[in-house]
Amino acid sequence: MQPFVTPKKPLDESRLALVTTGGVHLPGHPRFDIDDPAGDCSYREIPTSARDLTWTHAYYRPDEGSDLDAVFPLETLRRLVRDGMVGELSRRHFSFMGAIHDPTPLTEKTAPEVAGKLVEDQVDAVLLTPS
Image (tube, rainbow, N blue to C red; front, side):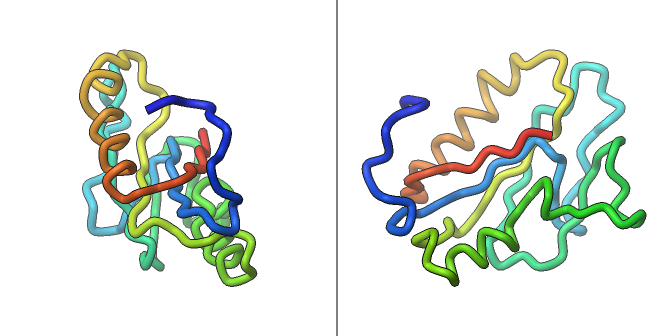
């Protein structure tokens, strides 16, 4: 998979996926391990249909009025699909945790797994939201 390539399709004909390092997950998913000194290199799959999301992040407090859509703009992307700006959304999106001090497991295992799933889902473009 080649990064930073010229898109083969216009965005309004493309399937888009969202990948974040904001620690977003479904409430029933295990929280990311923010106490791991090397950093948690795992990821969570988020279905496009998800309506109730939360996050494991030391800097964001979902119960203090934080806007999760600013980090994981799934609702905004749904609106862009409805408005015809984006062709469609992938059936699933992916969330990692930021602050990974030892990226070896990420680069050797979890990132290639997610890249394979994006290819499997025939994703044309990915919106990356660092946090």
